[in-house]
Image (tube, rainbow, N blue to C red; front, side, top):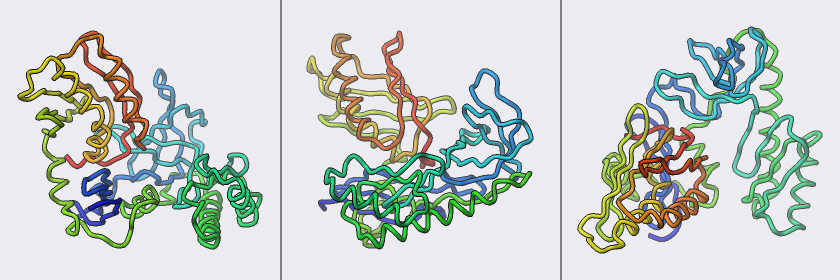
Length: 336
């Protein structure tokens, strides 16, 4: 089937959403089975704890026995602050949080404290961009920290205004709860179904279920370590406690360019594989043997592929042993 479709369902008992593009799984969002795990977007009134010397941040108490890590945090110990969960923590580690709150919806984003109204650069129609700025000014008092997303270009003004009003009301309510002197959960993060609607606005959301597109089988494939690549090549993607190891194999191809072709195939598909498996953190790729002079070609393929990926990923570079390292945000809950 051609086109992009959002399919909703569950993995175990947890809500899950899949983006199916041209009949292939392109993205997958799965909620943690444990409801006590805070989802990205969750907002806490936290209490500042000790600074983390050498780590560039400080620990904060989130309540319920949970701790957060605030990068670049400089809040006096014992003082309250609003923080928002930015991703999932590694087992046994503090939840990553930020003091820069963000309220995101399908057509707009509200970032309290940020200046002015901004329109997505993808909206090339200047007249429409001006209309959106005016709409935000009429809808949100003192219109500050408003970002109009690219899909707002073709959306109905009433729908955009309703979203902006709701975002402003939520942000105002959260702001009023900031002053108490104890930690508390103020706003739960969106579940997988809600995130899908916000993150994949261009896809068809007509109520498809996993069974309609064979998503369960696609997820089962993602639980396997092996993934097949073009021309009989393959890769093994195996998460450990310390890192995600990726090993590339040429298969039966014995031509001189077999290693380079397999490596480029893996580079092109690696962002999708990581998204759908929910993997992040440190990633080390052991590429198939290929001439050192072709490293630039493989690196170009990696950069082109990750440039289109929505999850923040830093391409760190080559190790002395010839492996390639990446650092990826833990934005997804792992399915394996």
